[in-house]
Image (cartoon, rainbow, N blue to C red; front, side):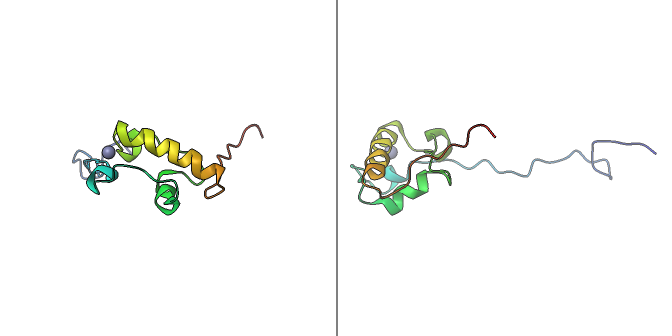
Length: 90
Ligand SMILES: [Zn+2]
């Protein structure tokens, strides 16, 4: 028996992920100021552990990412969204 990495019929394996163009959602909606009070929207930009997603993941432009990070930090202070809970050790 031969063990091969390619599929059984010998065809080269295709990559199934599609390259999607990322865009800044704030630029699309023409939002000039990212508001911390709109925390339901901010929750799209934090992970389950409460960490911010980097701009290269969400596609947010630098102008809005700066505002977004400030808005998230403000929303945390106002207890609208949770702080990061990184698990260390164990
Ligand atoms: Zn933008």
